[in-house]
Length: 148
Image (tube, rainbow, N blue to C red):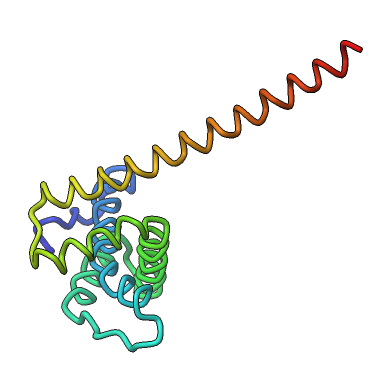
């Protein structure tokens, strides 16, 4: 941690990259436990002690006092949970692929994510087109009424 920690006395602007990277690392480290709680809400977490220790260390890079560290950890836990919930389709696809293959390469993970995003985009486009068609019919009906 000391190697990536900024020098004492640095301004917040100069520290912004460290703070953002630290916060992102904390979110990533807490995402495993967040996924457990989303997927198995009735079961206790298996606990990711090492992940929490690392997350705590990264949080200390971003903030100086313990109460702020705890608040940042809680925020990042909430952020991880929100991201996983919003992207449940991707989470489920990754889980299915891991169950099927055991391990995934970065390229395989990227392909799964891209596939899920493609499906989402196609559904959104279909919904947009249906809405446009509905509005077109409504406008045509309105035009027909107003011409009378």
